[in-house]
Image (cartoon, rainbow, N blue to C red; front, side):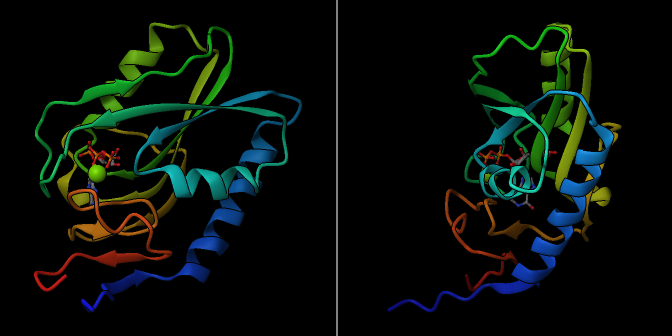
Length: 176
Ligand SMILES: O=P(O)(O)OC[C@H]1O[C@H](OP(=O)(O)OP(=O)(O)O)[C@H](O)[C@@H]1O
Ligand code: HPA
Ligand SMILES: [Mg+2]
């Protein structure tokens, strides 16, 4: 059987502790306010599912699917909308949940897409931020971890569709 243990960068416990803190912060910031949480598929599915369990406020969950990396470790520069949300977000408090902000192109594209729908507020929660590659200015309201310039996998993040199921964040090596 193929060996399958990519090098760990951020472990399960560290992720869980950070998510608990982010959930608390969101809970406090949205006292008496309803929320629409938008999970950006596919990468954010695991982070989003753990994060919403730590938000102690009424919320509705929506999914959007955006893709620009395909089977590469670099952005194609073209963000494809594969599936849109179904809810009307006009006048609503929206929290976008992303797995990673790398070049910032995906989140820039998504912010533009949502802003014309007139939400009341839009905040961004991202588990990871890779500042070295950033090309578009992005404000992350709820950040998990800043990471170095390595292509990461696991906990929802993929390389060519693989590794999303790993319970921790690992680093993609040539040997993986
Ligand atoms: O800041 P950027 O350079 O735009 O990169 C970040 C985006 O890229 C990845 O999505 P991907 O295109 O791999 O789709 P996936 O989530 O379905 O894997 C990741 O999940 C983010 O959404
Ligand atoms: O480092 C990364 N890993 C996985 N997907 C990504 N999408 C942007 N950056 C990354
Ligand atoms: Mg991907």
